[in-house]
Length: 121
Length: 266
Image: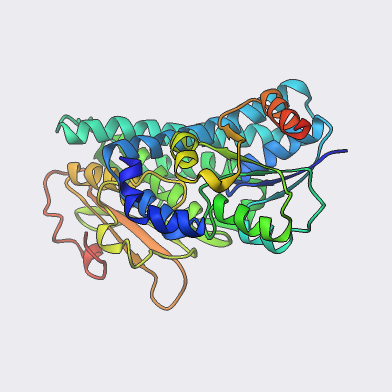
């Protein structure tokens, strides 16, 4: 069973996405506080990280950077409601090595399609 | 515009490939019109995401969690309603076309109904927040009930947003000429950085918010001939937001009511 970590500061998002992905056969851990996600992060646990970008205490990019220090080969998709990130940040941070930006809102079926395509890479 | 804002920092970012929190915060707190539209878009998409996913869950299977899903849909639909009301009012305030449609009604019944609706939407893990009301039986005002609903919902929404546990108290008092509504929470209080701009357009210290709510509340209350204010609670956690509006009779001076003596007037 593929295991996904979801980090988003909105409890309604994490609770609903967790339930939706579980029904599609994924194992899911969620955190609303990115600093908790980081301190509890264990390498080789997750097949994919699904991370919001704008969060208090630590934004998604910072979390990704810190997580990569613990596990360099971690796979990640940013899951964001901000249009600007997709185009602008990729231009500005070409070394970020992230190709997967999933835009909210998205149906569970489409989210699963994105996740599966990322897992197949 | 976005790229320009970062140009000063771009070289150092390229050098160490670090993404600084401060850089993103600079973007988030500099509110131009384009950025405001992005913030409002972000707010809408976040609520729509929750409504979409919970609706899908209900469509596919109903179980013991279904009631919680329906609450979540209502809660996020309410969040969209507040945002759409605020956006509509922003345009009206900016063009000086906001109309107050006054009628005589019992504000105690209105507050009690709003709180009941609000409690019905409370997230399961938010039940740590206790809502306490102190309302007289009936107090009649000559005001716009829809606009006052908007003010009270905005203030309640803020109180819940900044309070993880503890209580939120809603109190309604009256003197000879005025009625006062106060909402006191035990949350994180008002950030000192934002205090001077609290009721200004686009002021927000929250990660989910457009900074419209309090600006619109202030305009609505002042259009009623009243005043809105806010302060951090003395000697304890949290903040109190309040407003005074005239009682049913006409045109008293809002600077002369006992309610404003101890408050920070904004």
